[in-house]
Image (cartoon, rainbow, N blue to C red; front, side):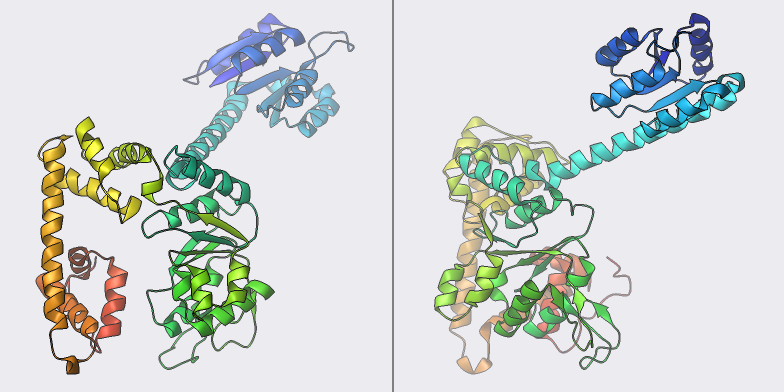
Length: 468
């Protein structure tokens, strides 16, 4: 911590320096006149100013209060403590109006009086620095810095995110599956004044219409069978933050009409409630589906489309992002616990591959290689083995699909049959551990529970120790 002591008397500066010597980690600068003080402010950029109100017996000379005013005029908010006599309290009040944090009287000056003030200011500066570092980390993780890639397509996305982040309008985010639509939504949130409020994402394709409606709008006790308590919906839980409606094209028609009214009136009514609640959250929507085609086929409301489509951000697929693949590889490798690196030939091999799953698929490949590769240097043979395993697995899945389609049609929904069987065997193999079963299938735990609830009248038998 850098401290500038400004006093016209050398003995007074020496006394202050001796008092501050008890605090570790300080760098002390001294100045006896206004010009000297401002020179130190410009060159050393101190963290704290200890200012004598008057720097000479001539009241016409510029003193510590003038130093404070000049520092504030430059836009710096450097903390300041005024050192004064009891006869100068009027000047102290003026200093406090200009942003001084505290003052000490010369006739009461002692380490017991001064050091707690300095320590308190240092702690606040450290806390402010930590908040700044955390904000930078959040921006790297979720802000525009998280939108990795220097291709023109990604530059356009970042510029548009920065331009509309603080707007309150709805934004429609379009792009292929795995291209990073939720990352763009989070960047919009983190770049906005809403960053300290919640960010909530709802997948509109994950639940049946009735459950999605309850999830978004909430419900009162007794609103429907099984509603034994009041549940706040995501619109209410988002408060003044951001609500992302992912896979908006899958929203049922009746719910589309209700959402349209919410966007128009900025109010909503939980299921079974008598009164409406205000909508304070910003609503974003994302889809990989051609909504214009959905409008033409009668599956999506045209008026809702125009309400959501105030601003559109098109997230480019990985195939249109030029050399971004290398930057993405470096970013994903930096996140790994085990460090790996790719040879030039491996990077060329990856660049030629068609990434139908886009950035998400690339991330999964990097994570898988980090787990399975025996060497830290990843070369082409490792990638070819991975591709061969993936190809073999694809052929086996195709064989199972053909076998399923050949079964008698009177069995009912064959999709439900195979999905129920996979869930049952995954839970059985995992010993009833839902988290392990979800990892085995390749979905998150909540998705597994939702699928089981939809496909089975009975909950899966779980071990007593399943607390994951």
